Length: 401
Length: 235
Image (cartoon, rainbow over all chains, first blue to last red; front, top):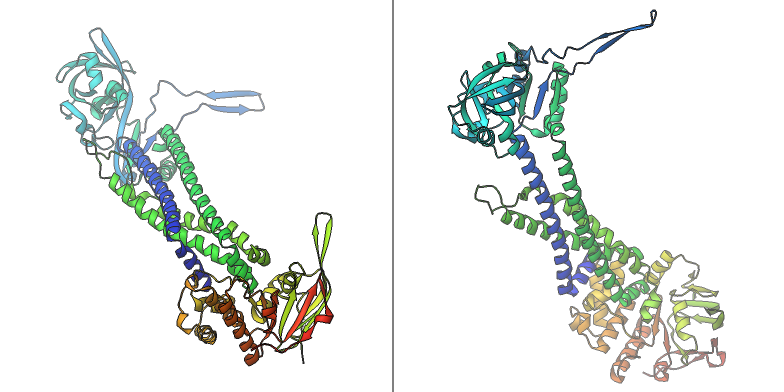
């Protein structure tokens, strides 16, 4: 293609200017890759932080509502009230667990009894959110045993695990008894078997763990459970799995995203900010290409005039400038992708003292294909204006200048 | 025999605001094949405008242009470009070569850009033409590194690339020293004599006109028919 040769020759005629132009494009693409990798890395870290310590899907009994029966003949309504004394529970939880165990996408299942209670010690009292679980599956949802700072996680019949801030507030240490009174009005003396430190203040201050067997009489649930917590292989599938399992069991299934809507909002805002920065870096790249090629078209007016005089078509002249844009885009985008990947990989080698990345960057998530396509496509678009102005040039006017 | 050029009743008026300037008035020019014609005239007489009109670079206000028997003034922009590419050759005062290309590429450019690129046939003809103008040693020289006379000789070779029926030259020696100018004029005369190529040479220089076989003089936008003469060129 002769236009390609001409475009290449034009770019090669001023190597420094071309090198600067390509460097500008590469820099913009590097910025794009860096921002994309950083935002993706940050989103992955935040999501991992949340999903690592919480259930991906929660199953609870469906909401009960009062039913109203109309009698049009007598113009009366009868209401079947819902008992507030009756504890909502999943009675057939073993069947649900069996169903969940048959699903390959499920990695952990934790039937639980959750409720409210008050810990009383002398004059001191503190409300706690209780999670009663099978001690053998203590770490199924959250790695509690790794957070133990005193005692152990054996959770015997009278045992209780409490957070480190609650222990400080109540002046409790391992082996000490504490009065445990549930929202059902049942009280029992339990022994602190372990103290954990999750690092989350609200958890360390308000959460307590019991075994399921210990919790049953205290919450008046001799057979059922209040909820079943589930972990999945792929957290991104939580919403669709919740829909499936909710339909299959008739239970209310809530994916982790719905329980952490604040995180979803933050991630969305972060992604939007990133998109804005990406757009600006691309726009600056495209303006650079358009202005450089416009200058080139202006500088070559007399040459273009000669080509037109010799009957070279306007399309040929336009294609020379479009091809210059394409070549600048391809080379600049390729160099920018390599530089961006190198920069992100280098930044990913820096770690904090706890072993986590200093900068939550994901070098593999730099949006390379996207930025390559956007840059090359955009470079062609940016060269349309100089290409059109070159092609429209009046031959006689250009030669006479 | 079909005339190489037949320009009939060419009128050209330029508008500058409310002011109208008549540059050409009822100009009639006919060139037989193989003629080497000097278009003479003082500065501002309209000779460059006439050359641009005949070269289809400018549309006349009125008039008919026939080149090689084909009506050329009514062609669309695209067809006019194609016509210029295949039927006309241009030589400009400042040679206007493409500086980023070699002598060979400059000569082959009109054919390569209009076709499938610099193929072997185009390369062979460009080499032959460069040899013809005495530049066989400079084939792969960048145009920017050639002397003024060499550049103009490359421009002559380029004008001949597509076997034109008519070559239009606008002050072809205007930017050359005397020795180079003489070489260029002798070359044009030789090509005209040996190949039968028709030339219309726009000049204000009597010495250039003396190399031509006929002279046409423009005076205030009109052909001075008394000065349309056949001459015996200097050799």
